[in-house]
Image 1 (cartoon, rainbow, N blue to C red):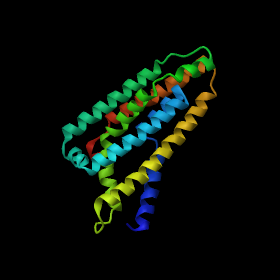
Image 2: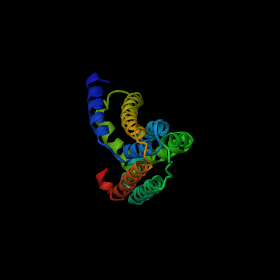
Image 3: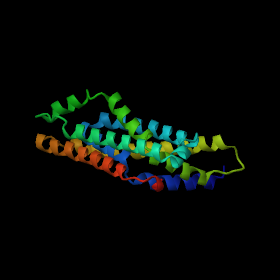
Image 4: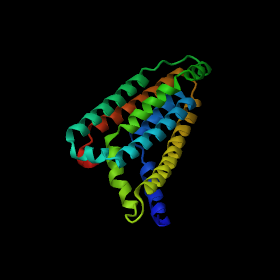
Length: 211
């Protein structure tokens, strides 16, 4: 493919990724509530989730979501409800009376479970799938083989998305690690939970035409 197409894709993707969406809010919330290990798990979930969403869009699921209002609505409401559930769960997370004790406890927070939460939110986001359907073809060269181009763009986007999520997660976990007072820890948990609940409510307001 022409190198300028790839550069244009990188620039457009970087701008798009810099704007926090529900997935990044999830990364921030888990990093604030559970620390660096949770941040690593969420970044992995974002990477695999984005790969799933992009592949699904190229396999035709995005076109199906565009034409089926019922399917779009079902996925939208399931995703929104899941975000709100995670938000309430983080809001009510227990707080340790000692920072060191809390750090040790959060190390046992089941990274696999956190990874799966993030993967589900990222992969089953109908707006993301539709977005990739509209976004990716703009950079494809019709005269060249389809799938090799798609794979190059997918790998590029995944690298950018993973770096972006890792940066947000590191900043949030660094801020969280400087917190020691239980009262402040509780505020942090409720801030993260509130972000997730807000992301879920925003997801409920998405319209199919917005994709």
